[in-house]
Image (cartoon, rainbow, N blue to C red; front, top):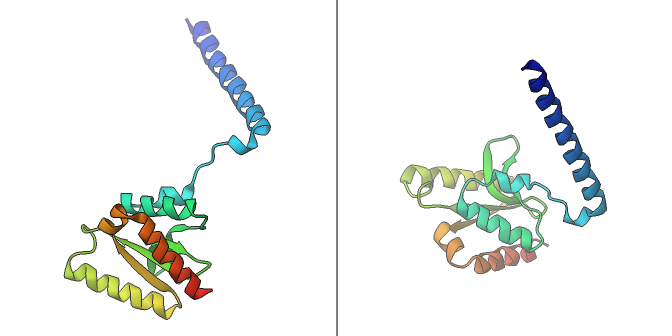
Length: 145
């Protein structure tokens, strides 16, 4: 019985090695088709952040999700650091109470003091017409250049 378990164990290891080698060979022959994991996309915390992130990256922008402005006081939902543009995606659940609005105002003031332009978009606007949101962001980029 123990011999069968060893055969199965080493058989599985051999199969894994063969599959790994095949994958590596395929990756070298097809570099443009290789799958890569988008770590920034994975940091998005809501559907509206993911939708806007995808639209911005498809438009050619280098977007950072949950970007921390030193000295690590606040996180920006989506940032375009090269333009110092902070994009906040305001879902109703996290930005509607007076306390949350005060926090957002303090955060915006802090970011402005650090030289950032803060753009806030309600989730309903992002969902309804992400193209208009991209257009507004691009207008702000043109102003910063």
